[in-house]
Image (cartoon, rainbow, N blue to C red; front, side, top):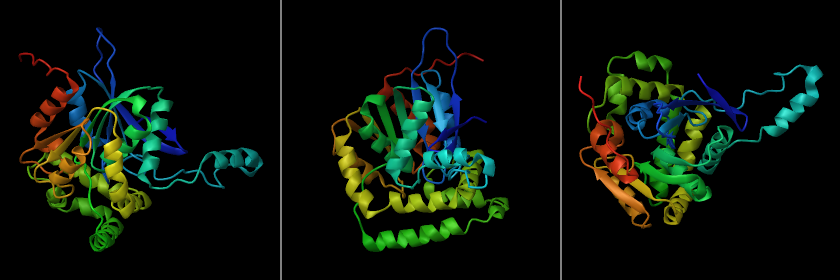
Length: 306
């Protein structure tokens, strides 16, 4: 499996692409949401691989990416103390601010020598993508933000959410995945329509293996007074054509929050997919892909007989 070092931390990434002799295809980068991984983007990436070289990666602390640098004072022999000090200096203190995750993406693209991309991001990943858009607008052609939006600060509700989230992150026994139907129960709050069992099981597994500090830290940075004040400004500043896709029955980020975000900027186009919730790209892939292709101005691939 391919890994790449970003700020001293090993990040998992993969390419999904379909070689073509006729032209060089642009790159589309996929960013997953909280406690997930690039795995749930694979079906969408395969569907778009006729038009794009699709780059998927796991955010720091999630999926197959490490939560922090494995470098310690005992990892290098005493005789190499100068080398150790040099490496320790190069590894800066990492936090779980979303802006820092946006910087991780910039480094990933630099490491892979990719100048400009299309972005396709979901939930917390969409917030990271929005921050990236405003810091590196010259590096993005167009963006798709799925299940994103703005929200008002509510101290009581936020405190309760953080307390509950902390408990959920702390109590994640690995044996949980062995209980029959637990994957269906776990993801039920995120869905309106059923999704394939393999997708449910993968999401549960990603949740169980997420780094504790990363999972807890991003709960506090994603849902915070600072985020509620910052994100409306970020949406208003977007200078790249952007499609914001919402699920009609999304309980995590209600569709109205997405609509309010889109209304802040004429460059942000809003699309709501009926009878879906927090994973419209999996719940109604056909409608989702149709809206994405129209926005990106790419053709539906022709199906061959047989």
